[in-house]
Image (cartoon, rainbow, N blue to C red; front, side):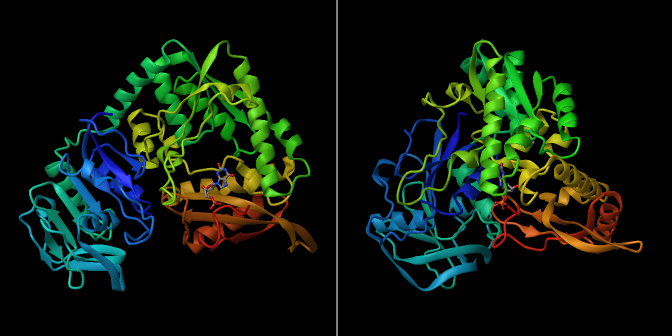
Length: 509
Ligand code: XMP
């Protein structure tokens, strides 16, 4: 990718949000840890210094050689980034008398400055800081204030270096996007031409030159990431790519057949492998969730390795890794360029010794979806809810049997179809059913029954890190309960999970 903004991360929980906001402006950006600054070349048009949970006054606080950057290209310090600028050049950063947290208003804005143009007096901004800049160094000028924070924004005179105490990346800062646009477009001069189509063309060219005439193998899961990654690789090298889609017996009802069909329609060279029994055998008698996960992971690797061996001379392993898997906010104590490594380590299955190709490792989930749509991947794949790798195994509490899987598949199918038919599916981030390891009493005719209980779960979320249960209409829940109990043999009770994450999690195991 050519033109870009460099975001230096000091460990703030909001750093990824800064990157998302910049990319929403069609400007490419990358996050790098403060202690591993890449070489500054002509492609880098500006730098954003992120916030941090630390104080610049802490011993060993994250630091940066600002002299080597200042004046060479535009810099925007956000929160900690702005305090670092003030602190290092002779200003005074002190603990706030009260912790500034929440909404505030910019009562005074100096609208002459490029950074703040077209913002409005009184603009709401989001504050979250324990320190305040009490005194600015020589040559630094206040350009915005709130009633309690005099230095809400500053500029260094004679250079394109700015600091802001608030967080423009958080949507509560109502004009935050304007400010970021002012920085990346007016001040850094970025052309805003980074789009899905540009990404697709550049990635396909890159894949072509990287892979050449080699062969690639890739596991598909039916999910968005692996489907989009495979499609890009396929566009670049055609049938030199072989995809493997494994039926682990823990997928949703009819999912294996339907998704396999879609992949074939999309022109992918895909091998469907029915390994249901191999997984059920490995899971037999296991009740501990981690033991179940490990068994599934192990068998998957065995199956995949068997298939990879059938392809002559394969050199590359395709993966659907996305950006959040690659970066994590720096733990302020050390660097965290957490790139998964699969390089020729002894003891790994043969396919893991392949070189890895990850065409989506610079994209966020919503960007992956956009690219998928631009590639005309069917909406039923792009719009799917996330589904855990171990599948229904972690939604059947206790041990797994083929019969329990069948029961849960039927329940899950009624629920998911119901959400779709009632126009609720797209309002939900993730939904499913859980088979509980208890029996409950019921009456059927004159008989008492002891049958299974299922829980339904539907949550809203942005990234799965936090989630809220969805207030599905009672009428809909009632309808689902009736349909499930009437149609699925062995189930006589349906409950709805009304827990949020935290403190609960999305899955029950
Ligand atoms: P939790 O249950 O931790 O789930 O709130 C967060 C997200 O992760 C998915 N999940 C998994 N995905 N392997 C996966 O590939 C797993 O073992 C696993 N456990 C949870 C979950 O479905 C949700 O989207």
